[in-house]
Figure 1 (spheres, helix red, strand yellow):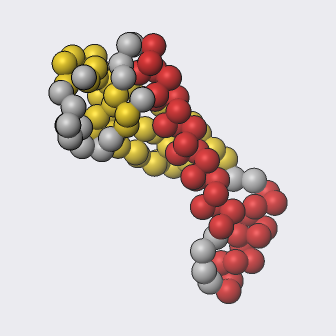
Figure 2: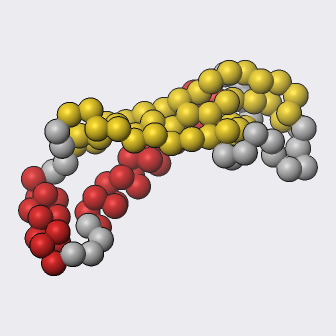
Figure 3: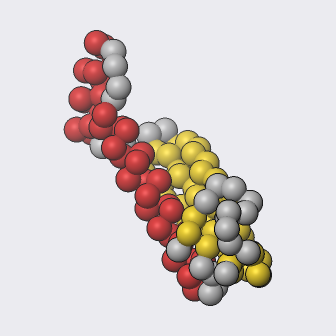
Length: 104
């Protein structure tokens, strides 16, 4: 599955637009991570526990989007975007969305 943020894929021809695909996940903070993050916020710098957590969430949302596109018969997704939003205190939703297409 080719996944790109552009509307076209260089060297390939889009033959069919299948529609919107999306994948999402909601992740909550973990007490152990919060303690380490709190300590890091005192001294400054990257809070790696959250960086890793959000990277994993993005990957999960991306995989769910790809699975939906495969079920539709797509072999590529164009115009891919990610959105993050807080759904409640301590929990964030990551959404990946794009347009499922067939290319040759």
